[in-house]
Length: 294
Image (tube, rainbow, N blue to C red; front, side, top):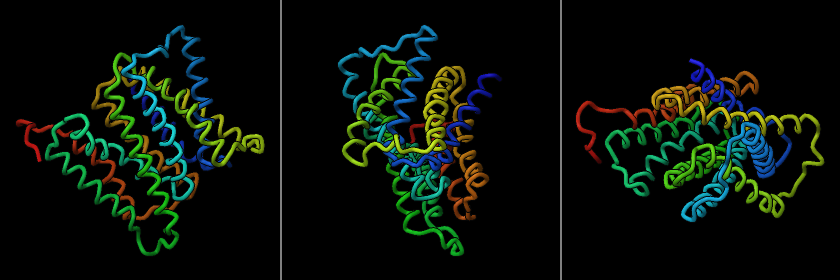
């Protein structure tokens, strides 16, 4: 029971990320960079305090995967934060949760997994959901090209996150916790020159309110959330994790409605439901042989 409560708590933390990001007066790249800095430092200190070890010296076969997955993680944050900037947290969340759909599409190609009939059904339902999200009721006149750009960024973030999931499948000899810490550090180092040569660093000009939200994003949404996530997820059944993971997007929609007064149309509600249930449908097991492929 304790593990379930902890996991739900972590999902609620993840669900509130959009609300905090919207309060930080920095470009998305710099927000992602400082998130990596604060989160990495917190996790490294927590590891030392708990007398655990992180093997930064990794096998040669893992080095390029960690480099590319760390870069993908960093730019995934940038695109997700840009999505929050251009559209609502709800639209960004629904777009970002296309990541499992992209994994379903890429897994047969890169992981040599069978493409089953239920995968096709799940992808088809997700596509219908996206079309509904892109077509809110006519009375929602605020839905403009900015929202479309935001949804596009959300989908780019989803593609990058899906690539991280795929690349992690090829890593050997590393725990999920070690992989995450190393990827966070790599993402931070890669984002540093990217921010320097693009929008530049504006942290010294930040007001106190933005600094507080940025620190919370780094410590709570990254450090604490990741530190709690991996020990907890390893003690829970896969089905439990899958079901409770829905707390994240559902809480994000609820909190954005309550705290940001974001509008949500009926079409978007139905579209969001379609997108969120599509991975679940793809995981349904039939009583007969699962070898029926499309």
